[in-house]
Amino acid sequence: MQSNDLNNDDESETFDGEDFSVSQDSSIESVFSNFPLQSHTAAQSPTHPPIANRQKLWLTFTENVDPITKILHIPTVTAQITGWLTSEDMTTVPKSLNALLFAIYFSAVSSLEEDVCRELLGCERDMLATKYRMGVEHALTAAGFLNTDDLVVMQSLIIYLITLRHTAPRRSWTLCPLAFRLLQSFGAHRDGASLKLVTYESEMHKRLCWHLLMLECGAAEDSGCDPTLVEISSFTALPPLNLNDSDLSANMDVEPVERTGWTDSTLLTMLAEVCQLWRLSCDYRLCPEEASKPLSSMTEPEKREFVGRVMSKFEDRYMKICSPLVPIQWVS
Image (cartoon, rainbow, N blue to C red):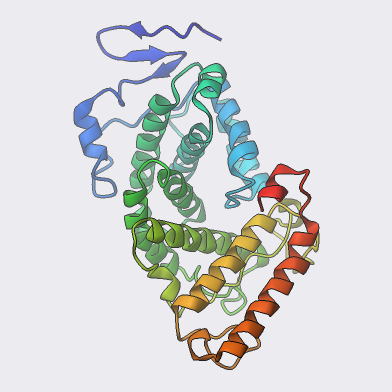
């Protein structure tokens, strides 16, 4: 690894192979502060990290981010980006993959402790996070995300919003309804079976919608407001199936058998069900499963019976398969 000393010159600052000319320019920072309203031609795109750091960031994403933010299908994405992780020329990266790469960089860096980031990437975490945040905003704008039905672009946007919540929660929350409208525009909020979608596409849509719904619930609570997205009655997408990524493929034509043990998607599936409970408590139009009336119309004994059913379901489906010796299962 190169020295951690900054090399100063007249045009930009370079730190361990990283060019920070974009992040150091206050005029460009002011342009990006208006995301998503700025033009992608208004400023130079931030540069990709060096090859070695690209590979480290992808590994960090798969280890730190993907297990708790299950948005991507790792086998598919690996096939899409492997060549670009080692490419010397990044000027011809497809716009959608460019957005995804910067979203991966941004979330991976944000998942690191400061000392770990400096040791792993040779640079301060906040400096890199700022650069990659600008990068994903620029790439999303260049990809025309406001008018897209590209799954990869939408995956990039949701990863960006989830990561942004930890540094700019108000901005993340403000953009949640916009992201949901984009998902609505191509029917991702509806049950995939009713739209006759293939299983893979349906599962990818569900991952996006439920992550966004969970993000909205938490962000709204932080802001002291009711979560408005949970009250959209047209949202009929079911929780994701409890599957490993290896159970899915883009060309599969047979419905996979849902697993009963711990999988790559268990945490997401569990959180989606928790979020659905939140919806039931907020939206008087929705009725729980096996119930003929919404929670607001139930008597006290009926509510207690409902709570008992929910507790038993979570105990049987989730608590019994979570080992206290496995960190992510213990957290779940």
